[in-house]
Length: 268
Image (cartoon, rainbow, N blue to C red; front, side):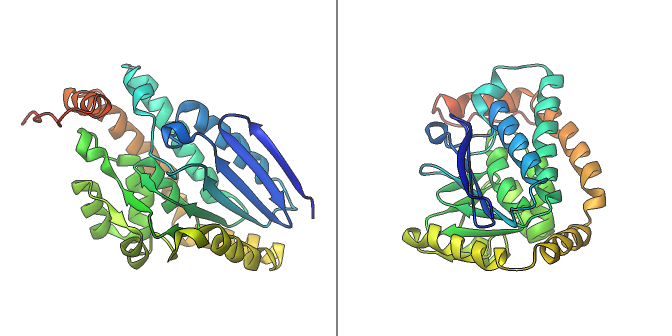
């Protein structure tokens, strides 16, 4: 096995590989590890590299700080008005999610704090997830006047249509116990045990045949109807980019960023 510790991007992504386990760490805690354009690009290049590494048998997706991932960078999104820019952003994010889904190695999300919107999508996209007892999950775009269309693709596949619809239409948070009961995560563990429990699960997987892990991951991908994934993401990108052009979404995001009360929505 090759052991290494290095930074792919000093600000955004850290990669550690040791005894068959690669840990990819989101490293932007100041903005709750938001999926900015730069973060998406850094994660994409990381997972592209890992796909070709025979020495890595399992991947842990982790995050620095109090939060796992707060979803897209709302300030960045509001700094651009063009629909084409938003379509490109959501397309790159969808490509990242499909890359994780198609990765030859199983991927485990190690979740603490909030995992919202595209952050919740990241958790749903991973093959397994271990959550701290303080972790919370939401597809909260609806609270900003923006339906979480792209997160819906992964979420409906993992927890089913009706629980996903409740999350998507209400924007309410689930605690780790409820997330485990729905199958969004495999287990809820004490906060102080999160790293150890995730590492133990990864080590058990890494001890298995690399060939069997890869063939098994490929089969599970087929069982998840991944053939339709590209088309589903393409449709959701179009819807989400269109939502970003509405006055409701712009007003809702601005109110959130300025810590103001949610505006009254237009009725149509």
